[in-house]
Length: 279
Image (cartoon, rainbow, N blue to C red):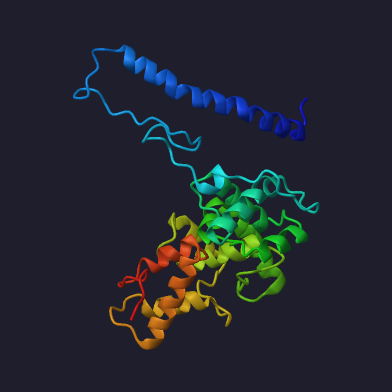
């Protein structure tokens, strides 16, 4: 079997041959075009031949590749304490994305973005080590998408864990959003309250929660500052100075790539254009 190190070595030594093959194609295409005398410019599609640069695209409908995928740094040293396979695979791309875009939160439209989503699930399931969590937190990795956690979780399993939580704490189901002993449960309960009893589907889920006297409103004083401000401005067409200041601060976070997809969706519900400076 070939080791990963050997594979990388072999891959790096195949590149020149692959490049020679690519540079040989334009002359082949030119000779074929020259040999076809019946082809006229009026009836033939336009061909865009590659330039001498090896990075030029040979056709206009080629799927675009994110810049950080084109320039992956395969020589990034993986810290020895990283033992999770997913994190080992995506870590170099995260650093590359950070150097290009200022953050490590790779979008979902790529394979690396899907791995980032997997990391969030593994974190919610307490399957990342303390060192790995500390490393990602230090990189300002966005940990949770509440919608993803809610949609991917087994409702009945989480309901059972919620009931066990209430038996132990007896605090009317006031699970902290960032509950260190069970992060997935904290995020799940938070999302259920955001959905609300009237919007949750199927309604059989509401019946199950009502059956255990679930408290649909949080009484915790440390609720989300974002949601508190959002509710204040949601239906406004004219904002106060304080509201404008908040909206502009959220826009700055968005422009830096640090606003979660869930919060972008909330902001898009506003009756104003929040993506441009509000004056």
